[in-house]
Image 1 (cartoon, helix red, strand yellow):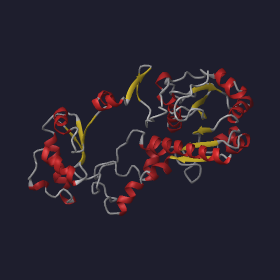
Image 2 (cartoon, rainbow, N blue to C red):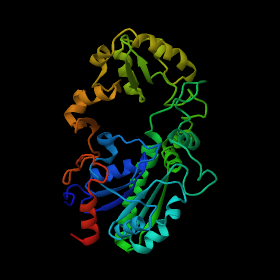
Image 3 (cartoon, helix red, strand yellow):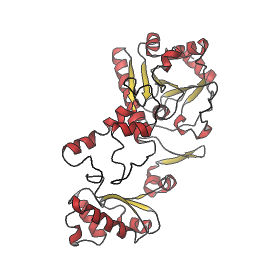
Image 4 (cartoon, rainbow, N blue to C red):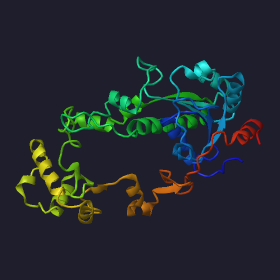
Length: 370
């Protein structure tokens, strides 16, 4: 059965070669928005592959087939599918797809309108292109990891969101949709080289602009958003955490007032970077005197720029998140619903397919026009 035509990308056909991380996440975004995303799964999982089954949230809403791309028959079937799709996603190391006989030149010869999306960490070119790596390595090299630490401490290891998702999947999705628009206007497809080092470096432009203006420095703890006491997280009396981000003076004044510190000369000049360590120490001691819930009762919903630090289960149950329906459970798995939101063609999260579940249906529809 053809995927129901719902969402702003209904009618778009995307072929996704089995991969991990940012490639499948990009495919999920497109599937959420209505694209018919078909994953080409391997015939057999390798020794390092992790089969998480129904928990593979990044496969939701997709359809799955299995092809042996190491055989001539499997390659030919894939190329026939290429003839009938708008775009393709692959996340292999540079050169792997070419060795399999399904590189960009071969695929574009079969379908000149094809958008061929390539997702890697280091990019298709450059000295590091053939080397292995992961999210942490890519954002380390791009500069995006630099500010993620306290002064004098090594940067923390963040979850794979900044690189794989932010610098990778989102940039690939943007590139694919832009190139598809171009292909529809010109009849000519193209190759998208989406590298996590490129995307995460591009995300740094906001910081780089502030750095040029003098608001950021290469020294940790001395910049507008990584040093001040009013842009930090704090431990509460119950061991839980809260965040404050009172960047603008009027929000800072409100924060100080609600904390009972209005008129205290110690907090009269919050932009004095020399005083930040002492003020941070004072804030640390003050926030430790109440529980997280008590701070929420005092500050949440005000212009003090405050929020509790929640774990994923707590986030799903928070009144604001619940009111907006940000999270749901699909097939028993907690996951965030599609974003952003569309007024006329709403996106929709589907189920996670079994490996090869849609083999015959996809081959019938895409190859025989049914």
